[in-house]
Length: 585
Image (cartoon, rainbow, N blue to C red; front, side, top):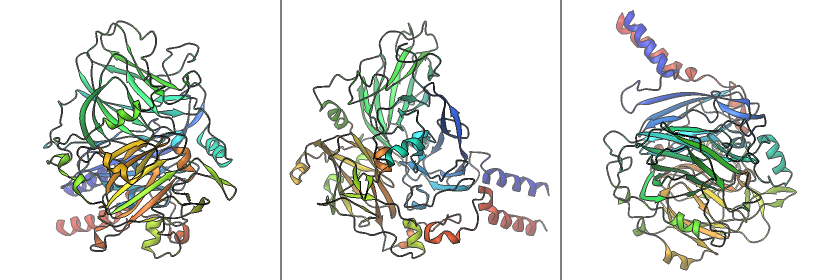
């Protein structure tokens, strides 16, 4: 009886997520329980409604190791539907867990959904966030770190510690007010500030920063080297990141090690993640500023749109004082930032998630089988409503998510007719999806004919960033592609009036989101999906999970409002009870 109780208790603890350590054999399982709710906070000094995870803003860190199986039970205590997207996690063969609207049914208020996926052959710095209803503008995001397995060495000396910084532009108006403005065709206007780890700026200037604002204070030890994992989880404003008197040694971006390069400051765009090694090599006569300031804007008008944290040495002799470190002085040189982006290269000699060099995939020698040109334009009015487009199409999410419609044979839910080139004529609202070729090798050109900096992200994949330049892309631009050491990542910036080209190997079956990370443009429809079917082995794609949610044309199949994660494991518990009882008798 005692042995039975121990066994049952072990399983109960693992299944309910009370521990986040290895519970079973094989690749370990790690468990988290997230409760999404509202909380009144004042990050910029004005009380406002913020979305918190387990009461925290930003949310808890997910800290796992390559090939771990991750189980996250999400409880929705908001007053509206919720979906959580795992930005950069590839969900190999498992799009059911991706957490975007045309793939998954939303989690209604008061309901649960348990996400379960493996971080297969991945390492690096990522984040999670709400993907619908403009909720990311109110919070609900947090960092997601995947560490190397012990048998795979880092391509640099092991840092003394990790420091996570989540930076982003922020509005005092809540996310519902912001989306109301967008629905009315209004521009969101200038942000009210920049947050660093959910906190406002240090009072470096009494006329710009009111007294009493809580700021982030990073504690460090002299002589040690830290890995700063910096995530831009904002709305639409590009930011320049810098640490006063300290060198940023770039080593990783979105799961891939870079050729190690030193920078005094670095441009980070919406949705991007970077790792920098920073050595505490100053004399600590005083604290130092950590700064994230708006880019490509009129400095005199945008001077309050700046985040300031403090780097505090344990032996510091005084508070930070004086002017902030200067931002890039490139007002008359719009190529400076692009040249910095081009300087980010792959570390071809480093091992990643597996013990073979990251650069061993000779992408430059593979023939492109498909080319897609995605043109983005400024928002327009379509049938009396504001919309943002890709190739002239503003995406309309289907009532029944695509994965669900395919599984249950719901017809007419979407069309596989997304154009490979920009449409001519009037823009339209449509549920138009790319009919991709499984294991094809695609060239995607993001052509930004909008007036703002944009970033684009592809769920389920990483891609090689082979080229970017100003002007209109044409086939002769292929001669300028980097076919040797292009960085491999999942989110890339596209400068206004410019293009960025990427190579993408379409080896992950499923239906995957392609979107701008600019929240206003994404909310207004600047996205699509790519559908990939493995006709040779349709069984390689994960079947629908036992806890799949139903909505749209299949809403009647949903039998409960959302059960706690333990309910999803009751069958296995019963089986264990039967087996234990049988052998004990």
